[in-house]
Amino acid sequence: ETYTRHIFAPSVDVGPYISCTDLLGLHGLYYACEPRFVGEPEGSRDETRRLAQIYKALADEHRLRILGLLRERDMYAQEIVDRTGLHQSVVSRHLTFMHATGLVRFRRQNNMKFYSLNPAISDDLKKTLDLFSQQADAR
Image (cartoon, one colour):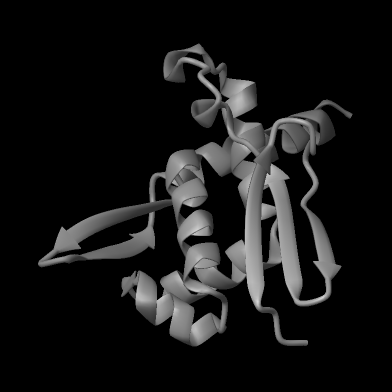
């Protein structure tokens, strides 16, 4: 279906889910508003919450596709738009969220931002996997 209008609406009430509306050429996407956008001080997050945000970022099909592309090489946003077929604003929103959680980083070159995977995140992901291995070792 061809849409004549797209609406992206952040919501603090939607929880961990993303909700869509399709009505007569209108595509509405409601997504969870991240704490940094609703005034929570950046330093107030504890480690558990930070790890939960990382996994929340990984729990989206489009973000996983983007991360797969970045595994190949650094890319600028328009390349990601071209490769995924997603709308520019959708890619931008996903990249912003993944940068806020630490999954990706960027560098500026001329007027473009080149995005890449953040190699430091693997230690954070390992922490949650260690929770399971410690329990298995205890048995």
